[in-house]
Length: 321
Image 1 (cartoon, rainbow, N blue to C red):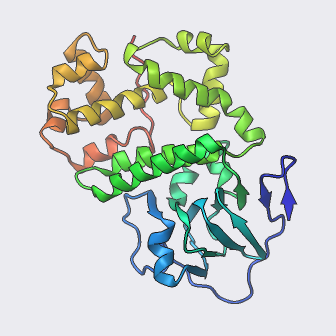
Image 2: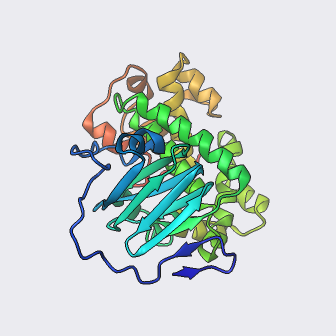
């Protein structure tokens, strides 16, 4: 077993496979596979473990990774050849294909987030989320992060309860990725240090995307060059800065069109577009359909694939000045 210099992260350096067969599941004990559009699934630890008298026997997820968040209580952890008793708060990273099992105390509180391996493989090679779920690890999250993980996980659960139709999975995807990246941010190491600039950029985007700022503005605020910003965003997220900003604009546009009574012209103004027709052209370029069809609930397979907010095929649209 290895341990980092902070003594917060531990991992098995030579995890040999168990010599006896273990069951394989998408979700422990379930025979049904996860819906194909559901790249992430969230549930409380209690909801499943209580059904099995607080013990999740050794098993494996062939195409899924998991992040276990024990906010409170005890967990007896097994990761193939590794066995250890831990107390919350803890984050446990379990990569795809790794045999693992848990025994929890009845007072346990926390969540299990399961993520599809194809989603992880679609990220940039040096993306911190992809790297974090390539090996088993345990980390003690910061106190502030513990509260944030709890709040965001509850929102993710609510999004799942809304169901996947019509296209509700887009909200679930956004919340799921936000939770996973918050969890990954708790791991100290070179990969996370290199991603600090990108995380600051994403935080700045959240406060500035409606203003349609040029990239020079972001670089100045982050005390770096546009070239450095573009390189690190591409390495960490697999997108250009403009694509990331436009993706955030699209996410908010869809939220306003679907879940508010605002008209298309009002949404355009809310998002900083002086010309509603310019907003319509931007929307069509990003999704393959017009805002009015979104408002009317019209959705087809072609539009669905085009509107995946750049996950599989990031749009090349330039940022609007």
